[in-house]
Image 1: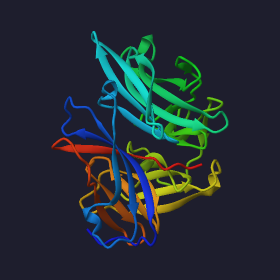
Image 2 (image 1 turned 45 degrees about the vertical axis):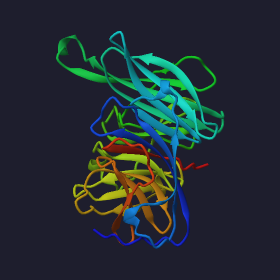
Image 3 (image 1 turned 135 degrees about the vertical axis):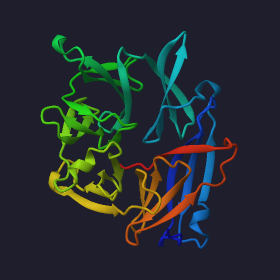
Image 4 (image 1 turned 30 degrees about the vertical axis):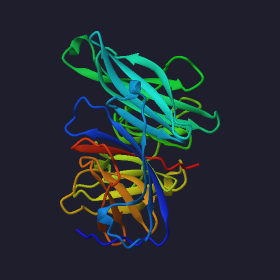
Length: 342
C-alpha cells in the first residue's frame, strides 16, 4: 500500500459531519462534529491527518441519542432514533439547521405491525422551496390463504413536509420495490434509491419527486455489471454534481458510473474505477471528489479513518482524524458529506 501524498495542486475544502459512536455500542449517546478539512499540496505526510477545523456540535440533552439515521440536505441535518416507553417503541425525529444552530422536533411515529425494515430519505425541492422527509416502512404480508407459510413484502411510503403540515402523509402509489438501505440520495429535487421492478425483477434506479410525490424509474447504464448491482452494498451517490452508481464486480473492483445529463440514459459513462485495495476489500462509500481525480472514501466496515484513492495512480492514502476531543476510548464514526450541488 502506498503512502505518498496524492497530487493536489490547489487547496480544496471538504466539509463533513462526523457522527461518532463508542465501539462496541454502549448506552452513551452519539457525538457530532462539523469538520472543514482543507486539502492542499502540503508536505506533511497524509497518513498523519488533515489540516482544518473540527468543531463539536453541542446537542441539547433531550437530543443526545444513539441515532439510527443521519441525513443532510442544503444546510439541514435530519436525525432519527428509537425511544422505548412502557414497552412501546416509537421512532423519533428532529432536524438541525447548521448555520442557525437550532433544532426542531418532528412528529414521532409508532412501530407498525409486522414492520421488518425502515429507511429514510431527506431532500429539498427548489420549486416548492420545501424540505421533505420520506419514511419507508417495509412489512411482511401473507401472500394468500392457500399459501399461509409464504410472505411477501409491502412498502408503505410516508412523507412529512417541514414547516407545512403537522402530520405524516401516506403515499401508497409505489409501483417499485425499494432497496432498504440506510439513506436515499437527494438530487435534482428528488430522492433516489436502487430498487427492483415488480414486474420483471430487474434492478433499477427509483426516483421520488418531492414536488409531485410520484415515483419514476431512471435507466441504469447498459454496460454495467447487472449482477454486481444486486449486491446490497451497491448504491446511488452524487459526485461532482452528477448522479452516480457504485457498482461492484466479482473481483471486488468498483466502477463508478456517472449520469452526465440527468435522466438521459445515453449520458451514462464509466467515470472512475477503484481497484481492490490491499487488505481493504470491504464495501466503500465515496464521499466527494477531490482535485486531480482523487476520491475521498469511507470504508463501511472500518469507521476509524478516511482514505483518498488516486484513480490515475491506483494508490490509496490513509487519512486519520485528529483534533477530536472527548471521544470514547474506542470509537467509530459515520461520515456525512455536506457538499451542496445547486
